[in-house]
Image 1 (spheres, rainbow, N blue to C red):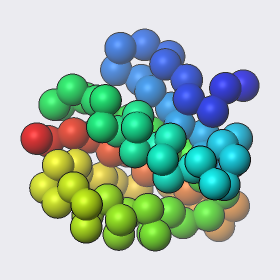
Image 2: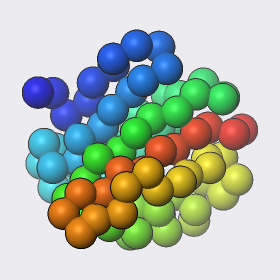
Image 3: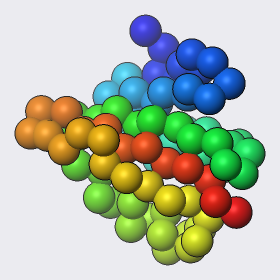
Image 4: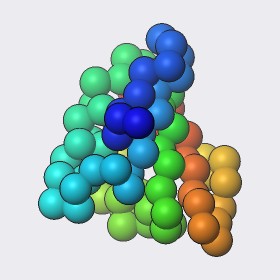
Length: 84
């Protein structure tokens, strides 16, 4: 399985555990920044991605809406939608 999967034009899945830790945030931000307005990506992770959410809010305030689809304890899924 690839770390970033495009299942269809409206289903992009980012599997964070498959990305080397030193490239993880950079890769996730690259995918999110490439989303057109109104499109979403689903982030799958093995822990709560709060540090990433804080970084996203600090660097791109108001650009994305996010919602937890699944909240642990072993798997977290967060849907990001580009709003601006």
